[in-house]
Length: 107
Image 1 (tube, rainbow, N blue to C red):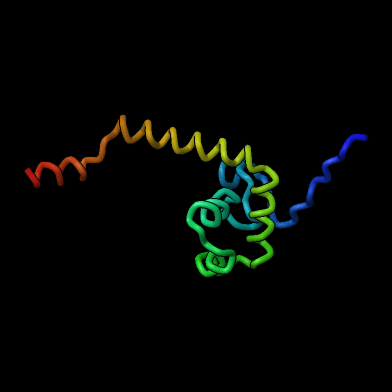
Image 2 (cartoon, rainbow, N blue to C red):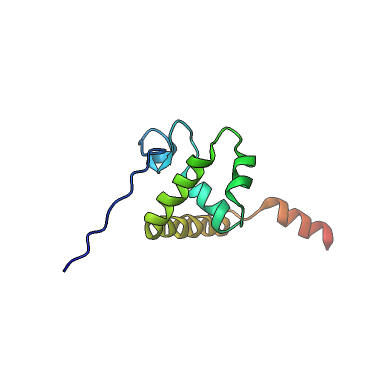
């Protein structure tokens, strides 16, 4: 007997190549699902706190974004790791001038 995985409908999530680089985002906004997930997962914010930060969103939009994130968690986690790796490379290639100046002033 095989198990059929049922896909959840996400009425508040849209993917449009012209918005947010084609990443899943909350409909009629430029807020990416990954932005919501990072606040919830990594920053430990509650859904209500996310609403405080984005007062134009409704609670059902935030929960739908989180549901979409968990349904596609591997894809989002890979994207996050790629972005972090890219930022690390950029920091090595273009070191902070401010940090260098501060180190100069301390010596």
